[in-house]
Length: 257
Length: 311
Image 1 (cartoon, rainbow over the protein chains, first blue to last red):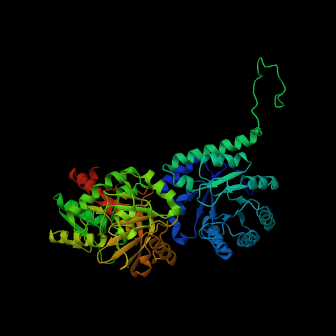
Image 2: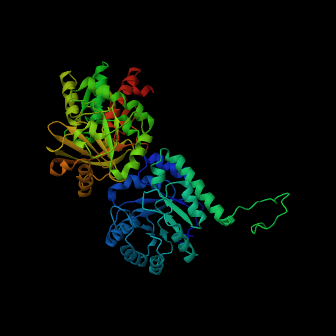
Image 3: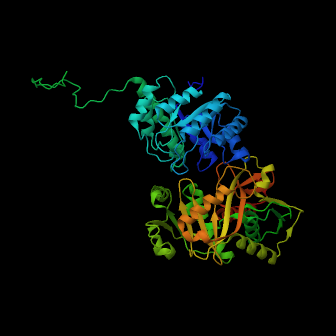
């Protein structure tokens, strides 16, 4: 549940960088997503046509504060978003460095406190840091969105151990992998690790065929979620024959059951 | 009589092709009409590069443009496009080469000596060209006038061909604005003879050489109908990208900046559309100089079959 909203599709799609709004719409349909994020820092009040277009997709809109570098910037943008899209949801992104696009944890927390107190339902774009995660929850966030890898890098899950720890540390908090996903296999992996959803943009928007790539991601996220629910087999160091080994009366190998 | 509304690149190409096909044409362009988006264009005739994000129809039909313009205006430079990326953005170059056709892998310094040692690898699209868009439009306009095609402030009669760009939104409800910002500099320390595209995941830019040491640097793409002048952010992004291509741009004189609203349909593909007995030629998006000639051809063929209301 994401602030009381249940989602059948666990893929969330960004709406930037598509070759055309038409292709964006087709990609949304092909992916099966129910949540799309929309930026408005740069488009501002003049972006009405595009907003109308994404509104017509029927998806739930998660406005974002992409491009904001200070808490104050992000807060202003969040207020603008609430008015424009008539939603309390806000994907809170406060960028710490223009080049690496990593989140600024201090400004993020400050903005999260103010926005939560103001009635926003905040989806903070954060790192896998556990203490920061706890502070964000204290601030009133009910969802956390740790990065997989730097925005737009397509590197997948850079710190799998850290992400596993985060999943284990916050077993009941919806966790969404946000940013850095380049391939459907990586999205499936995130779901297999037990994350609740995956948010991505570039990997679909800039694919040679964004619509087919959106479909692929939709399937991968669904597959990963099914797999996580079905109980993945644990890894083993040794091979294990799945049928008894015939005519081999020697049972000294410890691994044979 | 055919009345072409609008004197941007769409209107001028339509009027030119119609006149050449023997139609009786007039151009209606009121003096208070908004500045045509095409006057801020880069003037690149780059169908293959556009294929990176544009559908195949643009690549195919855009190939007519170099010939069309070369036949009609002076100053079409068929020197190709050189596509570059900074060392750490090499994956952008790989992506671009996969998404496009008709290019060769080159060492940029071999083609443009000013880039010697700055870029290890580039893509060269040799069949592409560039020109000065305002100069090309001025030439078409004076040729039309010289050939007896009148330009009037009002008085549209007969078959209407509506080429008003974004001003036609009152009739084309799915037309939307896509803001673009550009600047023009004089850079005495820079010598580049062909269009340069610098790939970057967030701030791509192109540099188009113009006469007398001038360069056009463009262009942003923002989903916005904001019509104010260029923003500080766009200036910073475009100039730092240009500086990455050649440090000589740091000493350039900025002689003009501009911001315009490109008219675009939801699929970003320029098109002819019927609306009653009116024909719209619109939605040129970022493909005005590339696609207007081809749409003007379609328009001629359509009207040769009879008046629009017959369709």
